[in-house]
Image (cartoon, rainbow, N blue to C red):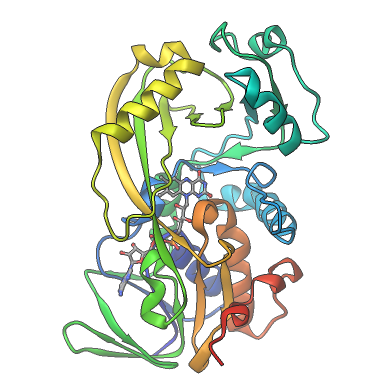
Length: 340
Ligand SMILES: Cc1cc2nc3c(=O)[nH]c(=O)nc-3n(C[C@H](O)[C@H](O)[C@H](O)COP(=O)(O)OP(=O)(O)OC[C@H]3O[C@@H](n4cnc5c(N)ncnc54)[C@H](O)[C@@H]3O)c2cc1C
């Protein structure tokens, strides 16, 4: 019997299991497909605590900032996972987007179109200005999950169909006992009774000479360059249940909007188009901690699971080891959705 079994081998389950293992716990990750085959493999890897903040969800910013602060140490331990503290240029393509962006990023200096193009010469001459959010970074989620999966015991091809506080049952009828059960099944975490829904996102992956040295974002699209020559253009946000069909319309829209801001995108090789399911909670904030029936959950990370993986892992590992969890995670206790 292990100390903790983790249901779901995405970035959340793998990083939490790894941090728990480092605290001396005997851990096992159960993954019904391949480790990292869910949303974590599709994600762009933007680590942007400030641009992802939404009105009405004030506790998100300290949680996300703390998680970003944990990244350099994590990268030091894991090796090259494509971490790049390159910052993000947020650009207005039409003049009616200027007010919206200035409002969203109060406190940052507005840059004229020519100042934006001095920063990033590949930007279209048609842009109307923008700003530079310097502290935002990116990571390659595929390399991140591969590095994590190499550091924890994972059983792939194991579909968990029933969950209890100290035992899970697989589709083959096997019962796996553990001191604690942690549900990190992403958009499928409803298996533990938590209110999480799938929110589809499609992204396009290109390759070639980088059209920018920083991430570029408009109101309609983002472009994430990586130092290995990959360029990710994303992402749609669609409420379509458990559907991961890649659609021509989404690809058309992403490339059109990307091309409007960075015309050189058109020269790159198209290498991959994928769709994934973000785990969304009713308030779009994560659920990290004790859930009903003695189960631990770490899910509902919506658009920010890559960003929030380090702080989520610290929180779950601390709870498993009987330590005090990071205070920034307290507002994200799953108890806010308890059914009794
Ligand atoms: C298009 C797109 C772009 C994104 N961009 C970003 C970004 O730039 N920055 C960012 O921070 N976040 C981003 N995200 C969000 C991020 O991908 C997710 O929040 C994160 O990957 C969630 O991780 P997870 O481990 O909870 O879920 P997943 O990665 O989905 O992993 C869950 C795993 O559980 C397994 N599983 C499910 N049910 C069972 C079961 N019953 N038994 C066994 N295994 C099971 C699944 O097979 C899966 O591998 C993006 C998401 C999408 C879709």
